[in-house]
Amino acid sequence: SQQGEEDPQALSIQEGENATMNCSYKTSINNLQWYRQNSGRGLVHLILIRSNEREKHSGRLRVTLDTSKKSSSLLITASRAADTASYFCASRSTLGRLYFGRGTQLTVWP
Amino acid sequence: GAGVSQSPRYKVAKRGQDVALRCDPISGHVSLFWYQQALGQGPEFLTYFQNEAQLDKSGLPSDRFFAERPEGSVSTLKIQRTQQEDSAVYLCASSRRLGSHEQYFGPGTRLTVT
Figure 1 (cartoon, chains in turn cyan, green):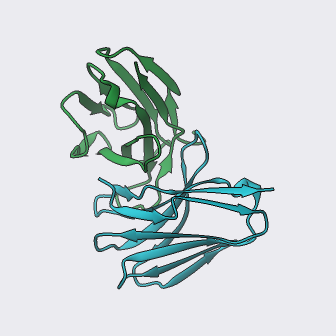
Figure 2 (cartoon, one colour):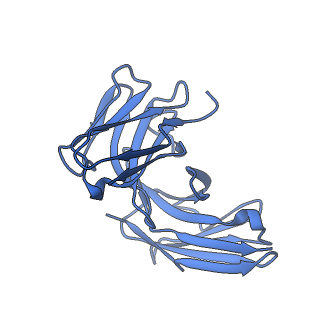
C-alpha cells in the first residue's frame, strides 16, 4: 500500500516558473527522499532530507521537511521543459525498502 | 556496469503463461530490490535481497511470484500463471550496502498480460 501522498497529482506550468509539489507520509521516518521518473524510464534519486533537517538545497531543487505535520515539499525553481516528469517522495524502512507516494506529474511547457 | 539493466524491456504474455524477468544490478552492489508499478501509481515494494539471501518477501502479492538471486548478483523475478492484474512495470533497484540510502533503478520491464 502507498505510504505517502503527493499533491497535486498533476501540475502544468510554463518554462521559467517555479514548481512546488507536496508530500505527506504516515509513519515516522529517518529521512525522506525525492525521486524523478521520466516517461518509460526508471527512477532517479534527486535529493534526501534527514529527519533532523528542515530544509535542503541542491542546484535548482529545494526540499523542506516538517516532521510535526509529516509533510515535505519539493520546489523546482526556474523550471525547464526537461523537468517534465513524475516526481515521487519516498520514505525508507530500516531494511531499506522504499515506500512511495502516487507521484505528481509535472509538465513544463516551452 | 554503467547502471542497473533489466530484460526484457517489454513482455506480452497470454493469461496463464509463466514469465521470467531479469535484473543485472550495478557490479558490487550488495542490496537488490524489486518493485511493481501499476499505471499511474507509485512503485510498490515486492522483495529484497542482500547478496543471495532474500531478507524480505513480504510484498510479493501471491505465491505465483517468486524471486531469486542465487549468486548474489543477477536476479530473476518469476511470475507463474500470469493474470491480467499482473500487468505493470517491474522495477529493479540496487544499492551498495544495507545502510545505503540511495537506490539505483533500472529502466523496468513493462509486462502486459492479455
